[in-house]
Length: 138
Ligand code: ADP
Image (cartoon, rainbow, N blue to C red; front, side, top):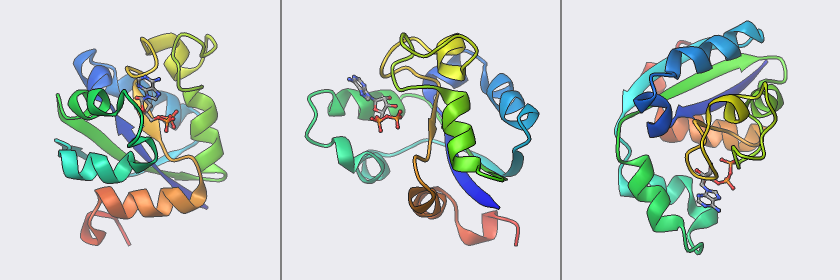
């Protein structure tokens, strides 16, 4: 059983779509393990997006991701990491296919509704980045 970390991004929250996004994950058989609303700081974003630190759009991502509290979720299920990434679609919402979360609900490269862990290893790191151990059921 895999775990994966989701962030419903500021565009998702402002468009009132967090319920729809979670509904799609649950309908695909994934189970909600933990959830919390949190305002992301520049420090946690620098860690979370360290692979993009040298990109010209990095400051814009930090501004966007800290502009509104996000909803952090832990989901579990068989092959959860891959399943969630498939349901989400590619990074650029304009290129994401109809039926995918980003394709149906996202706007562009940055405003793409949700983050999801891209590997089992990163999922475990990200679960620990965003949740304290006593916020997760044993
Ligand atoms: P993903 O979120 O699909 O795993 P990345 O890890 O490559 O994609 O990028 C992290 C986030 O940074 C994206 O979800 C998006 O919000 C933002 N981003 C990525 N590429 C761009 C870009 N070219 N312009 C603006 N924002 C971007």
